[in-house]
View 1 (cartoon, rainbow, N blue to C red):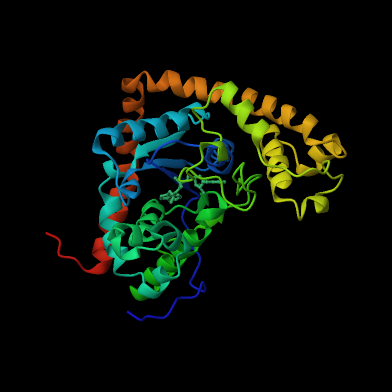
View 2 (tube, helix red, strand yellow):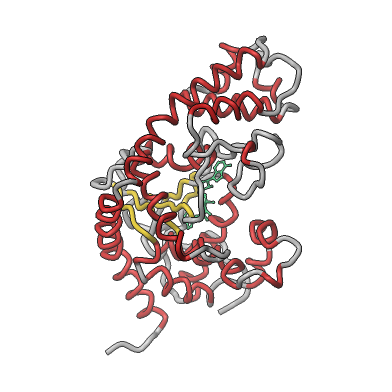
Length: 349
Ligand code: TYM
């Protein structure tokens, strides 16, 4: 093995298209997850390629998770997949930890990835904060497990929000290095990151420069998928803005991060372009735009949250989906990890 970062010049992968993504089982989902990920998954479900969508519970435990809550959190993400419109007959929905091959391939990839590559990961720096020596080792190798999640299914397309871009680049590097080091060109695909959705980076409602995030201490900064209509309306009303009316053109949003965020959210919820939103609301103040946005957010989210609540009250239905999904996922994943072990040279009877 060499320490050099490989290039993308290997022969192309010739396998079928497969779409894959995951969401961590670590607490409340918000509008950023919905617009950046869930809504996009449902749009891709009928694109002709099979979809693999999992609950990343192995990733969740890179920071402390109360064992008494983790199962419920896993079911909650599964409920969100279903409530957003994913059909378990078409998409494979499963808990990551239920398919052992994820952990097995992650170890092998830990020996392919280079320390220098991981040292560059900005999300580790953000999440570990000032006390990186107190972080779990898992938090550091987190992106390697993510590469295993993706390549285990030889996924060719990975829809995520923009914050996952660096992890997806690392996945391509690991795939290229594995193919190269073991002399198996085209064994793993170099997956395409699909981070160009209508709202790949939804920002905080309190600060247009910060990402909407479940780790933000202010609940006012985000719309949770479990919020009721009154909370959604109140949060939109209190969202930070500036005193100017909305501009007529996209360029007019450039130096106005809060206005840009609200227009982006409106456009993504309404399946409109931002130009169309500005054609309708340009010249109007937030006094007119905010109530329209709140009404749209409530109307769009209410069916999703109601269905999530219904499903959460029926653990048996969710568990059926997850069990069936885990079996179907393992049918794809197990032969791939077996082949990888053979390529690496592990003993076999
Ligand atoms: P997670 O659980 O943090 O987020 C789930 C999805 O939501 C997107 N997202 C956002 N999109 C737009 N605006 C925001 N403010 C926003 N916040 C979150 C994320 O980009 C993501 O698509 N590491 C992943 C989970 C994962 C994964 C994978 C994803 C594990 N293995 C393999 C793809 C492929 C994560 O922590 O997502």
